[in-house]
Image 1 (cartoon, rainbow, N blue to C red):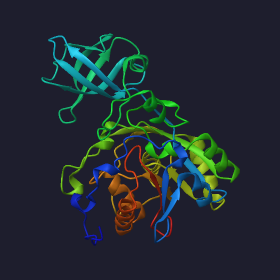
Image 2: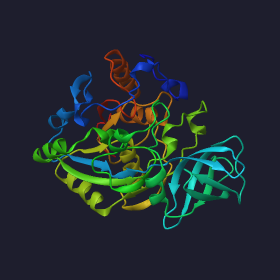
Image 3: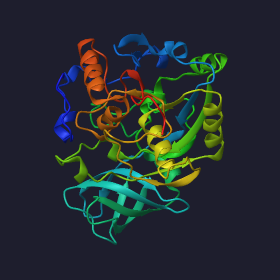
Length: 354
């Protein structure tokens, strides 16, 4: 993992060998008892997550994603008798309609019906588009209520066990508020109420954004040239209060610390025009080395999948060679990887802000 970065990156540059037994199947017993790799300096330092307050300064600002994971996985049957496995990608606001990934022996046709959980019906309205693999369905009632009653926790594909009551509690942040995500903002899973209280006592401020994480976060990049990759789109909202909090943080000389790549993507998307703008919209931002960061100074994040867009994002933030060294250290020291795994703290490689 000490390869030199070529002038123009290809997907293979973000690959690495990960022993399968390092993929965490269950969370740490206590949220803040996870390990934390402090990668803010030239050499990584092994810590425990509850030490995070000592790594931040009074006046710094932590920005969280307050999305709430919905029980988005459903099992059902077509009218023809064929089994269907579904994953809701998005609930369309103010309607009974959803976008779903559907897995069946034969794709259901527009106008057909699917019976889910032997409890409610859904009408297939058609495909959302020719290339994205999503289906547009209308449910028999309020989607959030039906999913909460009959759905399953949408655990990532690399977690082998079926969801249970512990996953309902632990695959959710302690401050989750706005329902709509089909994957957790996993860096925030390490925070518990006691740690949040200690951060407040230290003078670290808090703000939030909302980005409803989609299933595309787990998709590998399937083209070799990064310029050919098409990012999935996600909905996000940056409140005016968060824009104001970031301005105040800048004025007092503090650092903006994004908790999770979803928070970072929301903030940098909102600043893509040069100035951080409040409001709700879609983003398909693809952050790769060479990206000009405008908002985020530091990032709390978990360890990511090989050849994923998130590997490219952290390499853009902290530097390609630095991330290679950090991941090599994490594997050697047997950190736990992915959604239920351990965390790291990164600093932005650029010395000055644009």
